[in-house]
Structure formats: C-alpha cells, structure tokens
Image (cartoon, rainbow, N blue to C red; front, side, top):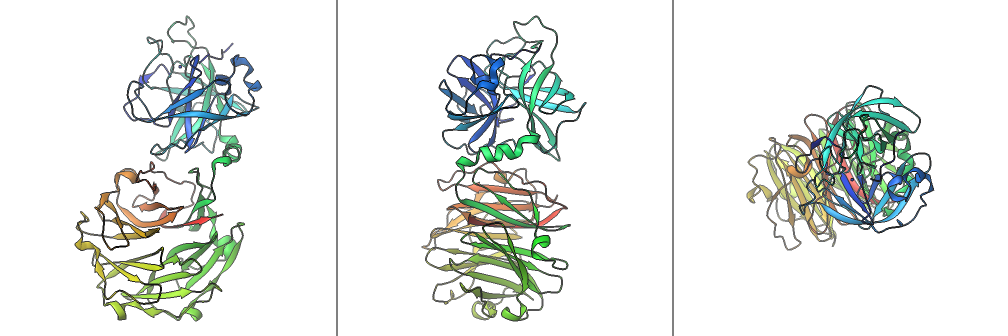
Length: 527
C-alpha cells in the first residue's frame, strides 16, 4: 500500500533561488512538516492528512482553526535565509472526497505569483513537475526546496497517480504542475507515496498519488470567498476574435472571459474599446468600423444593457481612432482622438451626453497624436494625457469646466524614455499615477501630486514580467491601489498592482480569452 507520510520536498534537484515561490513549507505544531501551494493572495492548498493525528483519517479533519498552531513559509527557497513571507494558518476548509485542504493565512501575501489550478486533468503519460520541502535521498530535514519530474499514470475521478522522482516525508501537500503556453498551472496536491529513494526507506517503488484540482475550481473559489472585499478590477479586451470582458477579484482570481457582443449586441469590426465604472456599473465603449462610437454597460448584477450609437448625442466625429473614459463620480468624462485633434464630452447622472468639445482649440495642436488617456483625481480634476510625436503631454480640466492654459510636456521630465508609444493614467485620491511605455518594451511609473510635483520615474518593466514590447497599456485605481495592464507584441495580457504602501504584487496573466489580444482597458468598481 501507499503510505500517508507524517509529512517534510521531493528528492529531486535543489531549486534555484527564487524558483517556484508559490511553494510553501508548513510547520504543524512543531511535530509535523508538510508542503503546500499559494493559490491566491491569502489561501494555500495542501493535504488534509497533514493536519490530523492519523494521516489515514484525513476525511475526519473538521473545518475551522488547526488543532495545533500552524505556520507557512512562502517564497523562501533556502529556509536558512530571510526572503519570502511567514504567516500563521488560521482556518482550514477540507475537501471531503479527496486528501485536499484549503488553508487561510492570517494576512495576505504580496509579491509572489500564486499557482492557479489547471482547467483540465493530467493525461496518462503526461510529464509533470513538482516542488516540495521534504526529505531527500541523503538529507533527513532539508533546508532547501527541491524539485522533481513525474510521469502521469492512472487518472481517476479525484486522484492521479504519478511516478518518477521520489516523494518523501514532508512532501505531503506539495504541488504537481505543468507548463501550458509558457505559464505554470497546478494539476494536483501530493497525498501519499511508497517513499522509495527517500533517506531511511528500504522501499524501491517511487509511485505516489496526488489529489486532482482541475475539477474543484468552483469549490475553491466559493470556499475562499470569505477574504474578498467589494472591490473588483473589470477589464475589456479586443482580440482577433472579438470583444471580451473579465473580472479580477480582491483575492487575485480572474473570472472567465465573456463575449461582450453576445450579451450587448454586435458592433461591426471593433477597432478600439474603453471602459469606466460608476457604483458597480461598468460602462464599455466600442469604436466600430463605421467610425461610430457605441456605449453599453454591465450592471452590478451581471446583466448587460445593449450597445447604443452615440453619434447623435455626441455629434459625428469622422476620423475617430481612439477614446478614453473616466468616472467623474456621478457621470463620465470622455476623451476622443480624431484626425489629430483632441475632443472632450461629459455624461450626466441621467446618462445624457454633451456634444464633443474641441480641446485642441483651447490648448493647442499636437502633431501626430496616436494615444489618449484620462482619469479623475479627488477634487474633481479631470486629467488628460496624449501621446504625440512619440512624446507625452498632460492637461487638466477643473471641476468648474476650465482647462489648463496649455499642454504640459511630460517628456520634459526625467522619464528615462527616448520614445513613448503608450501612456495610462489612474487617479488615487489626490494623486495621479502614470504609466509610460516605449517601443523597446521599457515601462515607467511615476506619481504626480496635487501640488503639481512629480516623483522619480521608476522602472515598471520587471514588475510586468519578462521584458517585451507592448502594443497597449492602461491603468485604473481599485480601492485606492494602482493597477496597470499591458498587451505585449506576442499577444499576452500582463497585469501588475501597486499597493498603497508602495509595494508591488507579482505580475499575473489572465488566460482563457479567445483569439490574440490587441488591446486591453481596465477600470475599478465595487460590486
């Protein structure tokens, strides 16, 4: 029989520093050690057998606080070091039909990319990898994360057998994972093994069993909902297949991508999209191939109001190529770029629009304008940004409707960029936060205080994943935090979040969108 280890990683190769930071070492009351996986900001997944006196009685584990004080060390490849995070485990939610448990951390973990559950089961003969802190072939209590490679055997309703690298005591609860399209995804949770090849074992068989996770994703989301707050990030993306919408909750989990045109009506040949939110209602704007601008909205309950053509309300604007929109609290402010000129309109609380106003006539002409962005800061100032001649410009419309005297040239600041192809604004309180992108893939971030002073421009490129030029950049304020998203030239969506204390989350990538993304727009809303 396979045994349920009294649980400490896989007897394979030592992991390189910083690798597989989502892997956790669990200390259960100082009497048992296990492994686990960070699956969102505040939850781990591990084996229920780690938290009971008799591992064979994993199904007897009750929901609630662990019987023994339990801690998790996350993102510390070398346990003798000080990197990563240490958190108390305060609540357990076991799964009754397999050796799997969700473990809530006392406080969230930021700066480490979680490992998301896979959407499909492993296939027999598939190669998987694993990581854990358990015993090795020559070390009783290792102080370093180890990794191993497995081959999938029989796949059952709740479990999958694996064989390859030895799985030893302490590896219980460890993740098995695969790489799909360059992204790692969690396929299982190690439960029990023969422990062949482990120090102190005379067994030669190395087979093990892992609990499947691909079929319990809905249970995971429902079970971890207790740590959610009301704030969400909403995103629309235009891809080669159409226009799609997704939501990222405060746990860092993304919903699936829904087809906007199936629920809000078809727009022929969508060229560009933008969105903004008011009190949970998400307004989506789509620029059609006919040059008309259309508006739809998603209600907080999830239903959609159909697209309507805004040409009559706003006035015809031939040559319209870009729009940006921001919430003004009770209404919306819309910026348009048409034939090199910048225009502005406002929507009142009754969802009635003013006619386009010519901003260029007030502030001056900018040559070869290609991008626009807008956001509001507290106090009612609407900030407008324009990329023109590969330079960045900024202007302000005050709450009384007056504009700044002229365009301010952001490019005159020490941005560290010789050429700019994208700019995005997000208002966080009285501050305006800005992201700038360059054709070479460099992305910079800075903050403009309400006094008009600018912070130093910091390098955001590394915080958004591997260096890659982008074709789209957008930003939003969500619960006072700055969030930004880019679409790379190789068709990936990457997202990063800056907390109010200045720390950054690890970059994440939503998946599951049909086609290849060409742009993405984001907004913050409450449910």
